[in-house]
Structure formats: structure tokens, C-alpha cells
Length: 105
Image (cartoon, rainbow, N blue to C red; front, side, top):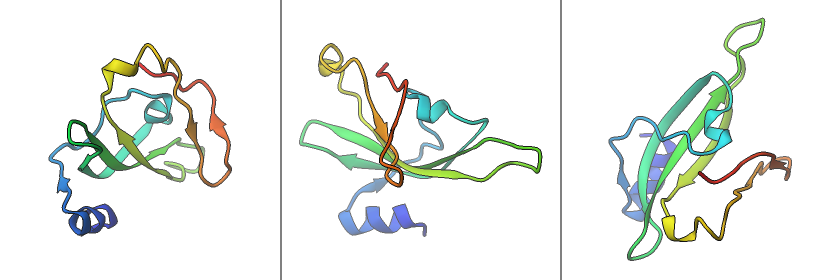
């Protein structure tokens, strides 16, 4: 049982049968190797759920597959706000900087 499975179990969240998430932000498109370790379904409200995943990407270098860049990502479809939120910024928790170019799709 992985870390997300333990967290989901402690909160009574369901693990998802998905093996990946759609590439709807540049973060999920970055690199050439994409890995989703675990995915669970998270209730945001009574009417909204989201998919939470442990995600990492790798950019191969001359020495091999490259180091993993791990993230916890949460995706929810909220079509009603697309006109009000045309841009989505993803922040790197360690550096505190935004990844430029992240646009809602």
C-alpha cells in the first residue's frame, strides 16, 4: 500500500482504477516519461469530486532516464468557471515559484 492509498484509506476516499490522468496542464505534459503511481477520487463538495494523483515526470539526459520530478496533483472539472479563470498557475512548493504558461483548457 502506497502513501496515497494510506491517505485515501484514512479519509475513506476511493482508489481509482485509472492508470493516468489527461494532460490538461503543461505540468502534466512536461518531460518525456510520465508516471502516475496512484490515483484516488476525492470529494471536494457534495456536487464535486476530483482525481488526486501522485505524479512524476522525467526528462532523459545523457546519463539515462533522468531524475523524477514528483508532484501531487488534483484535477476537477469545473466548466462553470472556465470563463472566469482563463489561467491556472501551478506553484512549486519547494521553490515557491509559479510554472509559467500553465493555462486552463
